[in-house]
Image 1 (cartoon, rainbow, N blue to C red):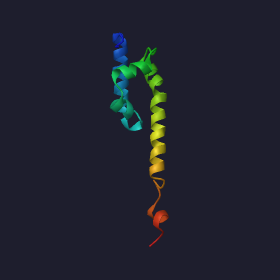
Image 2 (image 1 turned 120 degrees about the horizontal axis):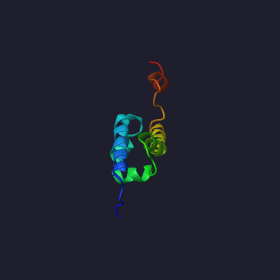
Image 3 (image 1 turned 90 degrees about the horizontal axis):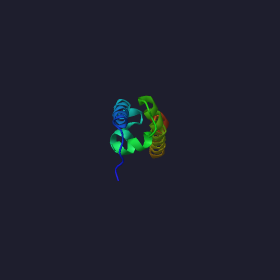
Image 4 (image 1 turned 90 degrees about the vertical axis):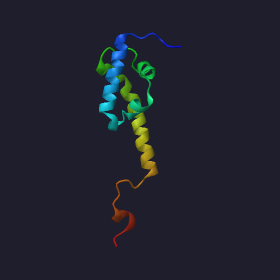
Length: 90
């Protein structure tokens, strides 16, 4: 069942999406790629300003970003290691 949201809320969604696109590489790609407008609205309910909406969604974005970093570290434990450390000097 779709809920009836005000035009102001859709303006906030537009603002959040713009912020997400501008910060795509900082973890906000999850919002760009995976969140519908309705899902964004559910996360930002109660926000009155663009900054308030971003602040409400930030913990979710940060959670996913940190889990991704952990997964990347687990898959590639030597990320950032030099060849000398990995293979010794030849």
